[in-house]
Amino acid sequence: MRFEDAHIPDEDLLLATDGELADQDAAHVQAHLEDCWACRARRQEIESAIATFMKVHERNLNPQLPPAEGPRALLKARLALVPAQARRKIPPVWAQVAAAVIVAALATVLAGRWTSMYRSATAIRALSTPNATLTPGAAILASRNEVCAAPEPNNRAVPATLQRQVFAEYGISAAQTRAYEVDYLITPALGGADDIHNLWPQSYSETVWNARVKDALENRLHDLVCQGQLDLATAQRDISMDWIAAYKKYFQTDRPLGLAQ
Amino acid sequence: MAAGESALLLARDRAASRDVSPLEREVVELFDQLRGKLLRYTLNFGLPVQDGEEIIQETFLALFCHLQQGKPRENLRGWVFRVAHNLALKRRASAHFSEAELVEETLAFADPAPDPEAQLAGAQIQQHVLTVFRVLPEQDRRCLILRAEGLRYREIAQILGMSLGAVSMSLSRSLARLARAADR
Image (cartoon, rainbow over all chains, first blue to last red; front, side, top):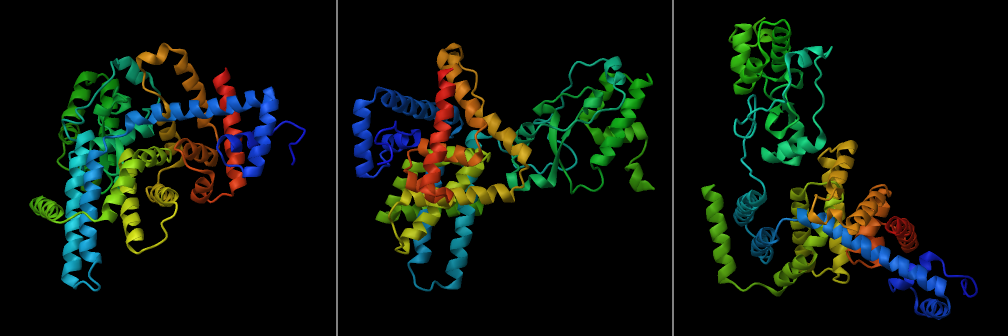
């Protein structure tokens, strides 16, 4: 036996603690532990490291787990539908189609119900303008000097965790997120805040009133504010109330300028 | 929604009017035992809770079909974890989460909410343990979580596609680091 005389390696102590050693090896470890105080202390350390980790792991994640009732009910309903189609040797095509439709519809209904339990989901396809309730716009208290002192209007990236929250708020699933860009309603260059109330998913598929058009408005407003022709509060209010109307007002046009040409 | 609602009622009626098969009951029992463990495991992939729940649904439907076809039923817990593990990997790849986003996600999950216990020494140990845990290699983190969820080494080896020796080496390495963290 390799650890007959020497102390027992950590790995074997762990295997012994977890009951993962072959009987013969386990007996050797046991015999050594009875004689060796140092190895007993090390085993104690390993055991308490496992116990601590388990406690931390659960305490850390459990608050995030939604109640099991909804998912459980959904699983039961889905299971109830499976045998109807599997018991028959060759189910007629219409039955297969009907069963598939029912499962899909059921999944949609139940999934919707259970998500709404922990997420204020409103399945809105945000296209060119945000939902005014979810994204009213939010600005930090910035003065004209602060806004204009920045040499280049900075369009900083929205932090990923904040993006995730915005998608969740708008009920956009992880698979669909590529179709959207999370954008500031009031741009940071005009004192807009890094706040969920100031962020909305702007759809890439929008071709007319899209992000590029909004960027042009933002630059225009920034220029007007810094040239002293418009006060910052008005600029913030106009862009957050209805940015498309603001574009029409400040460019004096009914269509985005790029398109008109 | 009307069609969906009526389908729901239909399924409910059907579920009420027939006996639940022993197999269904068995699958739901396993779901009750394992759902929390599986959800915590999928969270570790940086996936949103929602995605974790969907993966678990898919896993147990697959388990039902597996059992219905009379396939081997030894070590179902390991089987369930392996299926969920593979689905989680697939989901993560298909959702095109960037690596930076995922890391940020994991860190966000690891930050405990401020609570009244924050002043206690226990909270400090928790912080140390989480700090050490976050910087472990991904495979070591998974080993440790599966061990913490009560899986046997051969199950962990099967789920992660490692050898038994590699599992015990990984755990021993991680636990030594954690023990040092708890000591501080």
